[in-house]
Length: 461
Image (cartoon, rainbow, N blue to C red):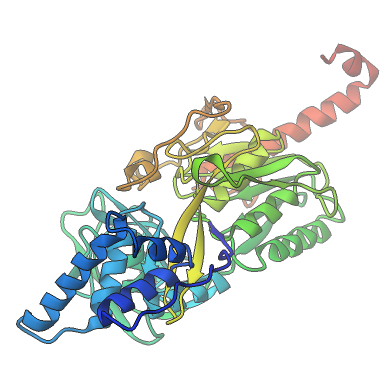
């Protein structure tokens, strides 16, 4: 999830000597302005950590003067910064101007590419989810597919941003993917034509004339407004009132923290939504719900899986801790950290992890994820543990033991509520079917209690 960039601090004065050192120091100062004051102090402290910059400029000079071919100094410096940031954690990254521009387009909900969400696992690049109505989804690529090569370049050891950068490009250009899948005897090659990928972050459907279904695909600008419109449209279709809602956050990789908070707020009257804490627990910020524009108190079934990550885990954790929704599916990705994006003077950018987040009960879901109240696996789906998770990423933060742990019960096709099948049921989606059947069971018990009247009320706990 992403936060707005912090304000920059004043930069240290430039010197007239050591041109290469000047370039590096100015770039370091640009990284959010966070290190400028410390660099100025280090210049008078020979024992300070920044004395290693002399080593950097020495190596840079050796490469420029002695390498067998001519070199691009900008590329060398970008590579050095990328390597520095890469040592931090899997979600902190440096982006050159092209990659940063692509990130801004994706956050706005439209970019050029093939439409794949990817993540590293065991040194391989694995598909988290294909985006609906994209070249990748139309070609038949599936969650769990492993990308061995992109445009002939092996992807072993790539990070998430490496894959995203290679998959994006101008609409109309081709992209070759060498793919392997569980059950295939050998890999296959797909040649896709990049297109304008439009991420419609919210889609909806009405079941039984009274149960709403809303899928939130990612948290971008205006996601909350799209959600409000979807709920209002469903209410109109249902004759003015919904008897229940299925909120689907499966394969939702996250996005903007602000939008996740607004989506959770739409279903909560009051209370804490999420708490974020910076280094050493400092700079704690608490986001709270407000009664204004809150949805009616109908039952909510919230669907999650291993592709539910980051901002979507904030929504799931908030609704679960407040008892506002029954969480159904499999354990989520387990990313409990917050990033901010800082734009640099040359059009490049740094995405930097600045905080951990905690659910309303004080849980950190780092590595562990959100444990569903009702564990339901998909029929015929790949083993959930085979999907990439936060705990599989190199240099990931270790989890914390904080707050309560929600126990999970298990549901299968035999234990899920068995009511007569309704028209339009998704026969191949066991998790959605369980959610709808649970809502139908809820309505049966509600009607039954109303018919029994005062006797049922006096007998209830």
